[in-house]
Length: 97
Image (cartoon, rainbow, N blue to C red; front, top):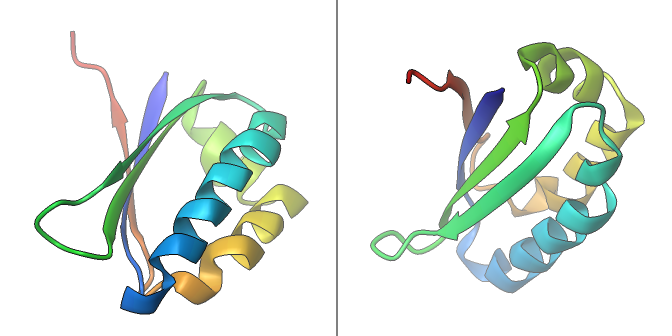
């Protein structure tokens, strides 16, 4: 299992729109993606407009190849892309123990 962690900074005036778009995607887009297992969505307390979206996938390829190469990724970016203040920083993690 792989955890994708996206560190996201959004435009200050887009908080409500961004959160609504993420919640919509978590119930309509991501569940259709091959290998998608779950999510955790955080809003930063110290830095307004900063979020962490953690998505769990069966494999790295499920995210980097299957999802990113699909129309689902296009739908996702159409929902949230205009909210980004800069491109999200995304990395993948695996459990050590």
